[in-house]
Image (cartoon, rainbow, N blue to C red; front, top):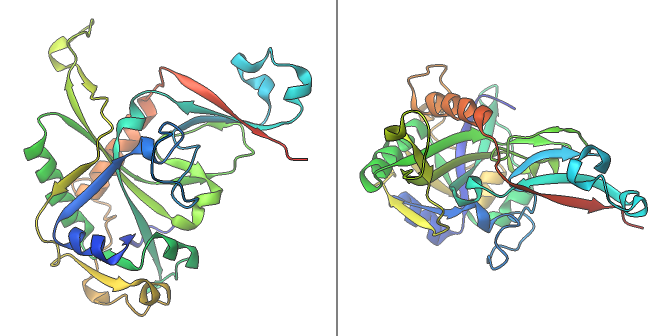
Length: 280
């Protein structure tokens, strides 16, 4: 995973223009996973029923709630994944592709990303974009939570705990995803414990949101997907700024560091097991 990259949003032309106009559109994570049966997202590139996975197991005997299963059924289970049923599904997400660079040249994307749209918005100054986005969220919502990190891709045939908001199976590795997750919050009136004045909770609402941050054509530009795939559309080489700076006061570095600390402390209150069955 290269530290030198430009975040890019792959969408159809009409949505690219709206984004360049400053409309940042976000859906709840629930629409992409197994939580929302009525979601209109059903293509295999965006739909991932293992979104929100908190743990992966090769052996069902390692999962307490499955130890009593019929042995003949256990024998056909290839994997058990525990899916978070709490706060995470309510986060609104803005997902981007990371165009990585090696020796100051772009690493050409996998052609499968063209299924996301015919136009690519390239953020040549993502830190400025984050500043505008955070300022707009601050003005629109009294209390809120923002998280940001690149997705780590894991082998489904593994036994380990997972970061439920920032890990996906290797099936999706070609997407090289950077994910911004945001959720409104409110005072927790039912909190019992120390410092109740600073106790907040996530608002369980799955509505889509649009945050308007104003025209961003000074810090982003769009290219047709064909010119993105072959690298000819990556212009302004000397004026592109990679978001990772090594300075923790910069928006990208700060948010990623904060996110990793927060996710280390995250403990799911409720999960459901999802099993993968061996085919014949």
